Image (cartoon, rainbow, N blue to C red):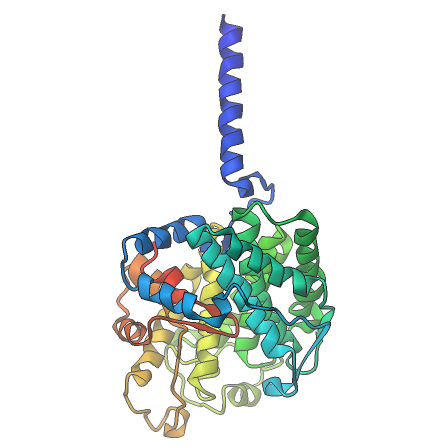
Length: 393
């Protein structure tokens, strides 16, 4: 009798395990990654679905904005290219805008698939991803690594959602897409294509793409490499007084000498908490760096690694420092010679949600700015972050 009870218990356990794996195929992965787990998780998206079912704000307005976008149209047609050529400031622009838009469209359809469970959106996301996977062979010209990061970030989010929540992705197509990320995108933003001496938003955006691709590919080494890059770059991008008289130089960036470091910081010579390496360039590029850093931390959080804690003081002070000027405070004479180019833009939601909503850290200026800018749309490497991350536990 005891033997029969043991067998029955084991059979029940196997049945439960099988049901669990069927409901969440990602749990079968032996890499230790949580899936879906690139920027958004299943519980996060279920939270959004529940809010939409209630007609709650700001999610309802944010969803309406997403579905009104051309990126969400079921008639959307991708424009893949074999070679994407992107010069400085995307001049020349041979496929650059098309690639970014197509990657964002794939992510938009992947989100809409999960939120509606309408398979047409999943199939459209797959069609867009497969069109590029069948075609692209590389990126070239000055902006190639940055372009690869911009697009790679969105591709990884789209692919991750479809791979782990939809059972209609044909294996051959899925394999093509994984091969594209492995052979075209990941090498284009790592190794010899790293850009530690460039303005810091580059490396942070490239790291955002790299960590997403690593999770999609179940590549633990690529994930660890991305984390190591982030840990070196964030302290070299946002200054704290505890760093000393001067900011930290970017690892392997060749900016160790004081004169080179000052020039790298746009000739700024007065350093205060929250100042960033690109502050005196413009707030737009600076905010890209902040948001990419938050993206990496959000993906790492889903995967059980608290990078947010490591960057807490830097990111909170950076957002509050810049939001002050975006809200109308004039620049002091010591800051960028009294002239700043404001505009953090739609790059506030994710970091604000984590530090203020989850951890209850006061961020009053950032909160006011977030309210003014909602709902957030898309640009280059991010999209619909009010929908996915506003007040999302």
